[in-house]
Amino acid sequence: AVNASAATDEFKLEAFRIVLRALLGQAGSPGPVQPDGSTPQPDVTTGEEWQLKIANRLKISTEQVAAIYHKESDNVLRLMLDTSVLPKNKQTATQDIAQLLAAGRVAAGFDESGTAADTIRTETEYYGRLDGNNFSRALRNLKPNFHYDAKEKTLTPRAPGFADAATIAKKYLGQEK
Image 1 (cartoon, rainbow, N blue to C red):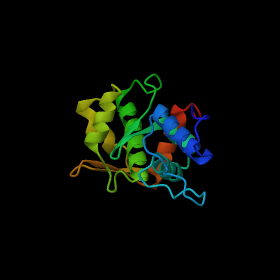
Image 2: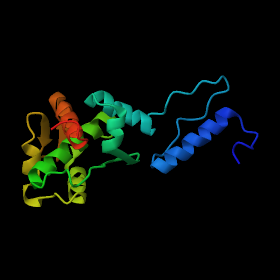
Image 3: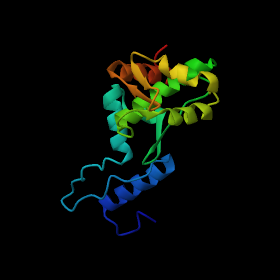
Image 4: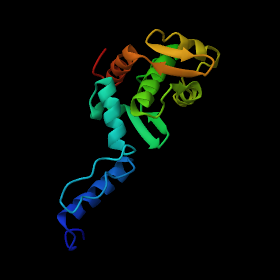
């Protein structure tokens, strides 16, 4: 049907991209092709832009970012982890999830002054690794590479924290031990 239509090749390509993104669960479009054939600069809210920001900050590929992170909406960044590779030890799993989530959210610009502990708690609970009695301690024990602000209840990566998150991401992707 598409080939039989009188649509231009650029229109067909853009339609294909939209359908492919929908099938892959990625919202948004980089926008239409301009009349001169150029593509406009990507909007900072498109999936590609947030993936590039994380990839640049963690120094990993966008493919690795796409395998670990999923943007559900403008303010919701989730992890896509295989529970079979998460540590059984709840404190270690909590720390891995916290480092990945805080580094990803800060790098992508979701959080400017740190990731809310409640956001991390929700993600940890989703993966069945929440130890409610020791949750805050697990976050505090991430220092010095992460700063846990007990008053504001936020976790903020420092420069080495982004490198730690990249190592954890690669571990979950089977690229590091």
